[in-house]
Image 1 (spheres, rainbow, N blue to C red):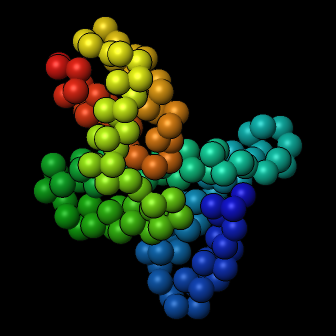
Image 2: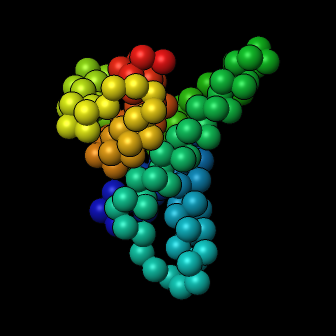
Length: 150
């Protein structure tokens, strides 16, 4: 569990600093990790891939909540959600730039020989596997659609 190896220390330092926003985000991570570990039936450790997927899900939830709060003109509720998403994203590996993702997708399309939207599933499968944890799935899907002429 290398991605989350210093989670306990981060929680302790947030407690000492009385940073309630960061502490809430870190506790959400810890709660989700414990839930994932115990749902398998035993106290098994999460692999790095599983931990990354878990963290991405938490970030996505926070961003979606913030978007809903913004639609409802509630910036007082949206800002903490965005701040928590930033704290959680600090545990994720460095995200690739849009240009880097685009070049990888171009390579995949060349490799497969994809020509139309019929090939989107093949391209998405390879791209999602290759870019797992390094890029947002929504960005990948958007770029693939653009490249395949949707």
